[in-house]
Image (cartoon, rainbow, N blue to C red; front, top):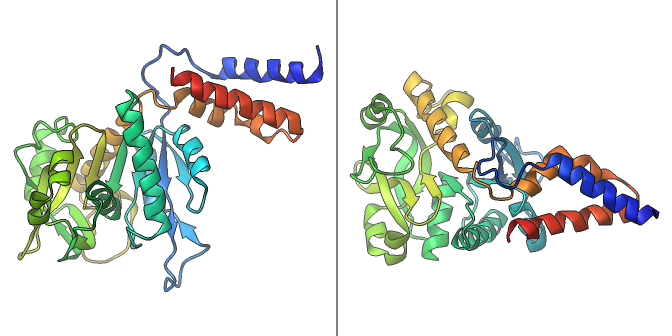
Length: 318
């Protein structure tokens, strides 16, 4: 057996050893991507050109997910490969331009890929928090419909809609936790821009795509605080469930009560469970558990690994 043939055999053997049976429907080792964003030029504590806040990583890991950074400034082809190797995507909060930033560019790529995958019978969930919520509304409406609200550093209860009880997101929450969310100031808000109920109601694309699960008010304007898509596994909150257990800045709006921490755990657990569908399972399992083959420095072996990975991605689409 020649060296190239032997290398192919070795790689295929590794794939078979690492990959689970294809009949398995749930992935108990989900990998959730978290999208990075540009550092702000006036941030004195910034290091490098982009960042991912640690609280989002801890938030997902607390619910049993592995987390993969999705960096900005990559090519469309690289993002397609990343999409095929993760089981869901979280769009975090922040303060970049949601129409012109690299964050918005990459979010649009993954949004489009996720729509396409779900339409084809695959299952790829997306979660948006604060800025991520806003980004999803811009991508769906194809315009920015946000308005200024007085919601910077304030905690609030949620005003649930009638749709919340039957929603995928909230229907499995314990009743006492739903009561806490509805009656106590346990959702942390750190945003200056919101999607008003009025703007949502007037936009046919948003109304058709999302259903509203909760709203809030700054005393002058009612805005939407929780949504989920009707046809797709897309979810978004204008508030910050990840802050309560994992961020300790001493300022208004931060809540560390037991109900707030439970809300964080239940939202994280829900989204991670969404990522346990079979999307990208073979590829992701191989990449993260047998990825040592990627680092083989002999050129033809690296190419052979790439060929096998490409074959696996295509095979799982059959």
